[in-house]
Length: 79
Image (cartoon, rainbow, N blue to C red):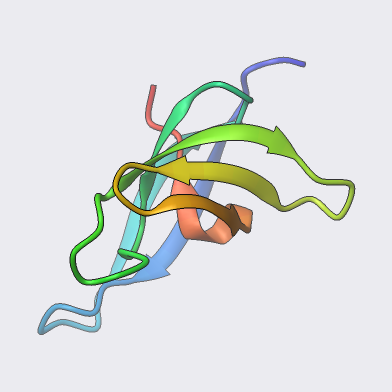
């Protein structure tokens, strides 16, 4: 699997409707990713990807929240 860069667009929800462009690296197991929107109001904004399901979603672990299933539009791998 190669590291490729893709552009992902999402709408910010904090007092603005502007689009933000992020350069996200291809997601890989055992890497930390930044969540584009918090899963819960008191949760961390990062998750550890564990493995990818056949349907393309990811099993991830969020500190103090536990295991969760994410789709690729919910996170961005920055490094």
